[in-house]
Every structure is written in structure tokens, then in C-alpha cells.
Amino acid sequence: MKKIILTTESGADLPNDLVEKYNVRVVPMHIIMDGKDYLDGSLPVEDIYDYYARTKKIPSTTSTNAHEYQELFTKIRTEFPDCTIIHIGYTSKASSSFQNAVIAAEEFGDIYLIDALNVTGGLAAVVIYAGQVLQNEPDIEPQQLVERIESIVPKSRLSFVPGSLEFLRAGGRVSNMASLVGALLKIKPCIELVDGKLVSTKKYRGKMSTVAEKLLREYLDEYNIDREQLYFIYSIGLDESVKARMDEVAKENGFQNIRWIQAGGMISTHSGAGGFGVAGLEV
Image (cartoon, rainbow, N blue to C red):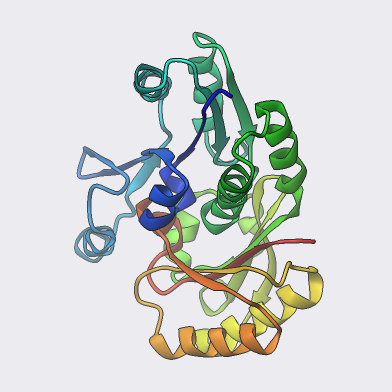
């Protein structure tokens, strides 16, 4: 059987231990500060917040370019000449990264490209699912694995509340933020992926401790999430007491495994410090 290699972008925020466990190749996206281009993951997230505190400017982000994908695919093929590559990409509705992967893949054979229509933990959930299937069924045919991944994409559900509205607004990734006017700075919007687009769907008021619990309970009421695994996403600055309470609520709702995922540079640039989110796969 041909070896199958999974790839994704840094915007999946896939924890390093799972990158190694499932042999996922991660290509970095980009963060621009002070006119310098940093690879996502190459600088501490705290530097992003320090930059804003110092300059009152939000770093910009850019997608992985076609040349970087070419280098990634070439490196994998050099290591495993006969392998099949399955790329599970950051939503094409919020970045040109996926389209750049499509362009790069034209020069190669045996590459499947799947638009996960999701970001951070929602994307990670799909990648981890693919890794688990491949680990449990090492002889699976590539086309069969692709079909199973594609079937799970619409079942990946992500909701999050940003830590800083200023970061979210400046990032320009949420399609209907114009509707949040007037008392905007006193509102914590719930951001969800709708057909691959980041959309503000609800508005919460209050401290993050109250908002996070309400978000989680409404999320679990709305979606029939597989109790085997739940993912919590946080950006640095989220209070430990909030994390502890979210663990309690998840366990009360029958979740077997709870995994905390730290938002990396790409996501933190748009959400700010102290953000919270939840992701999982519907049954």
C-alpha cells in the first residue's frame, strides 16, 4: 500500500504532540509586524499582544503562498516518493491559502485537496479525525479516506468568543460585523463558521466566565456533538478559573475526552488575548 501523508496549515493550531502522533506536515501561514514577515509559530503569541500595546496597531496576516506549498509537497515526495498526500486546508472563505495549495498541487500527482471550511479547533478536529482513521486502518485506500474526511467536514462545529473586539474588527475576517454597532465595545460576539465563513451569530454580555459557560451550554444544546471528544480553544490570557469551569461543564455533559488547544499567532491576531472557543464533531 502507498503511504498516506496528511498536511495542513498552522491555522489549524494542531498541538505538537498530535502533529507527531499522526505524522501531519504543517505549513506556516504568515504574520506581518513592523514591516517584517514572521512565520506563524516562529514567534511567541505574546509578541503580538505586546506589539498592539506598543503601537495600537493590529498585525496583519497572510496566507501560505503557492511556492511554500510546492516546497512542502516536494519535500514530502523526496522523503516518500510513492506516497499519496491528503491536504486538509484552512477555509477558503477566509484565506487564499487553500487556492494557493490548489495551484501548487497542479505540478504533482496523487495529491488530494480538501477544503475543511473551518479554522483553529474546527480544522484541527477534522485533521485529527483523519489521523485517527489512518492510524486505525493503515491499509485504507486514499480515495476511501478522502471520502470519509469529506463526509466529516460539514459535521465539524466551531464557536468562539474573541478576547478583544478591537483585534476582531481590525482583522476584517468576520463578514457581518457591520451589524454590531452602538454598544459594540460592551458586547462579546459569538463567532461561528457558516458555510466556511466567519460570521457573528449571537451577542453575549458580561464577564468571560459567564459568557464562556453560556456559549458552551448553547453550543451543546444546538449541536449533537460526539461525546467521545471535545476541543476547547483558548488564546493566552484566558483565566484558569474559566478553564476549570469549562472542564466541569463538559464532564457533566458526558464527554470522555477534553482537549485544550492554544490559539497560535494566526488566530490570536484576529481574536486577541483571553478568547475562548469550543469545537467538536457531530454524530
